[in-house]
Image (cartoon, rainbow, N blue to C red; front, top):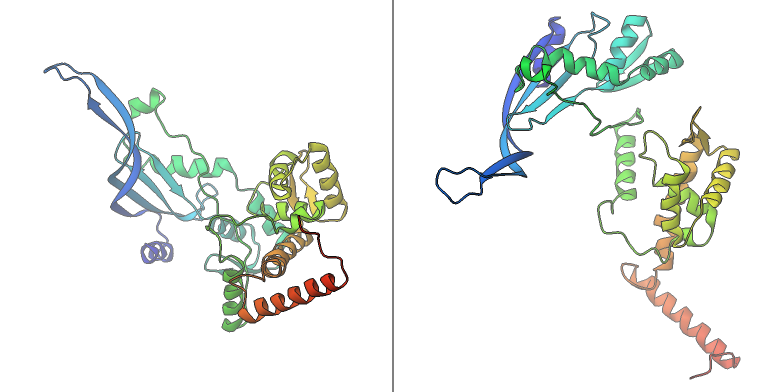
Length: 334
């Protein structure tokens, strides 16, 4: 759809750019007549994942009006009850249009900002994006596109209620040479190669050795939390890493220490915390320390450790055992 959306932007047009019909699996309701008697209806309603028709309405929201400024987006509506719908928007595009309207100079990327002369003003604009803006976009375009609900249905209270299903956030990285981007991508893959695999045993986790690494490891596991973390939400992760009970008072003490060291900060008027830049660096360091050094070293006596390392450890173990035996310090046999 990108060529159609870009063409609409170049020509200064706004509205529904394209409609795409597709077949997709969706959770919808079905019904069957449980009665075995002819002419008697006794329906049973079930929810099942079925392949049904869906329609994508790709729209271009213009930047010429303060209430119409999301740029490209789409609304997907399923044709089967309960008619699930999906809205897709790009906050970067919204922020670009807000910056242009208010005179904030910036250099744009295809999906983000390469640079900005007034980063604080840009951040303030981004902070203005909220639920009302998303709801207004949905209401604006469902008013001009066909929906399964009639005006009478909506008057009776039958309509969609929007909720967040997926939020994608990122830190924009700009490289001055393609080879640096390749190295960064290779390092990212190496750091996350086992994502999605069954969890490995925690018996060699450094989090069992001291509470502070456990707190850092727990914080690292919550990097994806856009709205921050609390005493309660983080405590469960730390208790799992420690493999033992971890009280609320212990968590409060650790959070206070992390805050005093500048690794986390408390959001105003709340009991929620977020990582600082230094906190992210410390969390990443502990994660890499475990995955790249401690875990391989503690499991170096068995595959996939290299054979020469395993042979060296066997030789060392044999020498230590022999030395202990000669000193008559070996464990007595039962």
